[in-house]
Image 1 (cartoon, one colour):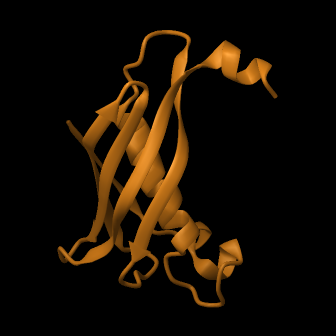
Image 2 (cartoon, one colour; image 1 turned 45 degrees about the vertical axis):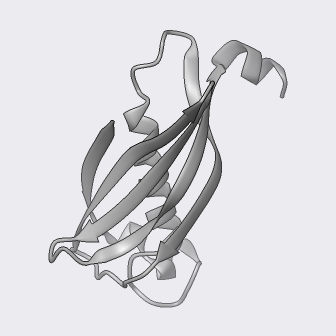
Amino acid sequence: MTYEQEMIVTEFHTAEKLGSGSLPVFATPALVAFMENTAMKLLANLPEGETSVGTLINIQHLKASAVGEKIRCTAQITETDGRKYTFYLEATDSFGNIVGKGTHERFVVNVERFMSKL
């Protein structure tokens, strides 16, 4: 199973704006959030009362991207173990260059039970 989505880098997504760096380029935290969101959406059709939560992400941010660049992320499930899902994530720019890649783990949880533990 795979899921793909695209985004356009805006000023809101820059390292300068997010505080992770001083340059007006696509920030690593924004890339991580986009990649995690893509994996989450792959598991969007869970039964009512269930959702998935991220527990591990390991990515490499390989290439800088300017404001205005289109980024496409693909999430692919590579392993399942009960309620644990492992993904391979890859983000590319409009030229086909790999912007980032890595792995991510999510667990399916019961929303009510999960929130009652807080």
